[in-house]
Each structure stands twice: as C-alpha cells, then as structure tokens.
View 1 (cartoon, helix red, strand yellow):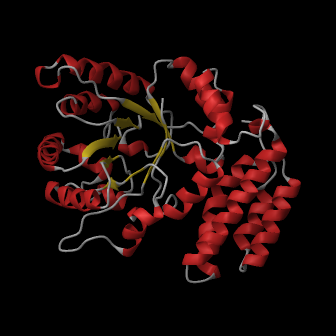
View 2: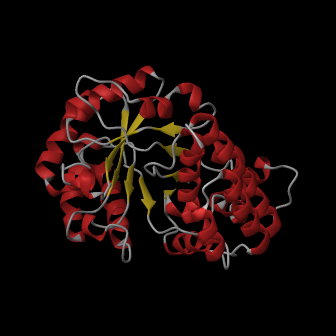
View 3: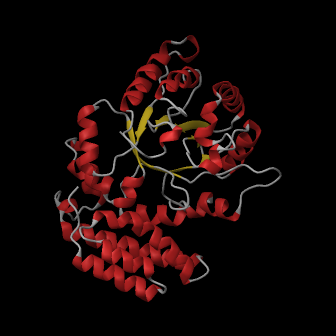
Length: 349
C-alpha cells in the first residue's frame, strides 16, 4: 500500500513538500498543485519553481495538469518529460466554480463523450504515463457508472477516487460504495481483450482526517490499494508517520522505525514529541517562505492559512488562533504560536 499526499492549490508547493518530507519522511508520493497549459507559453514562474528538479531532490513527485484540451495536455507532458518526470496526473476533481465553469476539473465530467475523446487523444500521444484524480460525477453518484465505462478503456496508471459529486464540494458524507464499485469494475477490466492481464489500481481519497479515521476505513475495506490524504495532513502532518508506526504489518512498522532509528515504537504517540515535531516543521516553513517571498506580509499570509488547518489539532486553540490571524508582524505571529504550543494540549486522534 502506498500513502500519497494530495495536491492542494496554493498550499502544497515545493517549499511545503520539502519541509514536510524532511520533518515527516513518511509519504510515498506527493502530487503538485495543478499546472494549466497556456497557448504559446511554457510554465509560469510559480509552476517552474514547483516542478524544477533542483526543488524536488530525493522526493517522489507527480505533476498534475488541469485542462480539457488534449494538445495542451500533451505539450505540458512533453515539457515535464524533459525535466525527468515519468508520470503525470489529470485533474478531474477540482470543484472550484472558476475551474468548472470552463468545463475543467470536475466540470469536465459533465460531458462524458468529450471526456472520452480527450482521453483517447492523450493516451495515444502523451509521452508520460497518466494517472487520473476524479470525482464520481456532477449531480448524482449514479453518473459514475458511465465514467467507469470510459476509464476502463484506457491504460490508466492509477485512478484516484474522491467519492463525491461536484455539487457536494466537500460537504456531506462520501459515497464509499462508489470506491468499491470502481475497484470491482477496474479489476474486471483485465478481462477485456485490449486490457488483458492489466488491472487499474484504485486509490481512495476523502475524509481521512486522522489515524482513527484511517484505521476504521482499513477495517471496513481491508483490500484497499493505496490511500491519498489531503486536508487531514494539514491538520496532522504526522498522520501517516503515526499510521505507519501503529500498523499491524511488520514491514510497515519496520519502515517507520527506520525513519527515526533512535525512537521507540511508541514515540509517535508521545504528545510532547508530536508538538516538538510540529513546532520544528512550522519553524522551517516560516524560514523557507521568508527566503523566497517578498516580505513579512506574504510570509504571514502563508502561515496563517496553514494554521487555519493546523489549529484544529489542538484543544482550546481558538483564542490563540485569533491572535495568529491578527498578527501584523512575524514577531507577533511567533509569540502567538509559542503560546499556543505551550498552553494547548494536542488531540489524540
């Protein structure tokens, strides 16, 4: 089983990925925030910095593309191949209105015939292997059957399923029966004449916010392949590290111990150690952002956004988070953060 870090626009860029990998070296792969092909242009400065080899040393990264134009997709895939990448991910899951209004992201799912034609083109001409991250429809989960008909025709490297429809955004319960159906259908795809001997791995993504959430999921779905974590990793950046350490699989426990050989197996559940690791992580993030951003205001914006998630891991944190939000200088921000770490116990989840 692989544990993967979802792309989160504006958050999980190369600075965040490298800091996370250094402080919590537990993820098998990270996906970049999406790249949008542009006519007559290559990458923006932000996109280039995010995919540049020198910014992704010793870390497994898969770039993601957001488009509904096959030519643009293949052009960007070609440029990514020149940078040494072997796989690219297609975004069919973004629910943002500014994206879906252009029939991109999850909005592309509204036109299955156009999506089918698009996939036919990119799988015929892309120089890279292609994985797909998708929702299960636009209005109704029943739309997923038609989408699975389409997906089963292509040599998808991996299908990452967020089992909500577009209109649900991130609200309500996930439709996990759709994930089960995807595994059934895409395993059966191996019987097809054109795909004989090949199955399409299915990765689950959605509402895995804690170790306990993930353990319950694995009890209910013991044959799960890979798992992708998004918002849960922003709340607890050690989530997968803790999950590996607690795993009943001896190989998984061995891998977790190797990450920090000096630690006993229980260290990942030690509250003081968890707080110390998060403090070090956030300290590194602030330093690394300060090294590339134009001033304190930009650094504060980044750190405040992260604390809107991270604060959920600490009991009684709201008054401290208010001080963090109100901070106008890094000294004020650091003082508020230090007080939170000192006064707010970490949740056991």
